Image 1 (cartoon, each protein chain N blue to C red):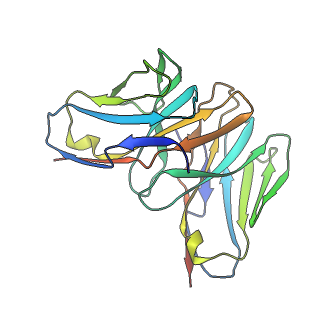
Image 2: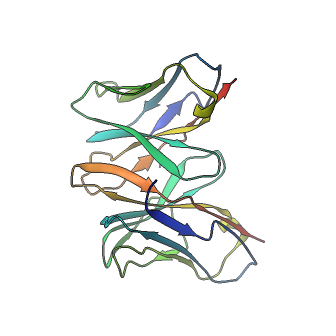
Length: 112
Length: 114
């Protein structure tokens, strides 16, 4: 069964605009991760936020986590055409065994 | 660039054939995963390995089987391929449990069964 629910399913913006994607989940977590997938390729890890953290930055990426609402958001600032990809959140469902569960993803299109 | 490799990248095969999708990683990771993903859809965990000789089925029922005889190798086998097996198969590995929980993915194998 699906753990993360990304929202929106698709997002289309112009270069230079900010893109915000949301992820909701249903169980407790130890951490939440965001991944990027270019069309037809494997996933690439972007950023991880632990359950005791509320916000994290990495370059143009900003991730927030609200464990009371069981939700996270990924903000990409000053987007570029090269940011066009699918973005997935993944959680461990509170287990330390190492299984990762992914949502359906948000398809981001950035127009030049 | 992640050191995890999947072969083949694309495979078109007839119904009833036996196939093995290869996955190898050179990072020494204990945890390895197989995910199945249809176009534009979520990833479904179909197999998981904690380490050598330790495998478990994932949440999505799959007719495939896996083995983990060596740390670096995690092949997936379909004894008799069917059109319903057409999908993309993604292999990943991680050091989860060591403070580095991020997963590294291969490029995927796109399987088409005709």
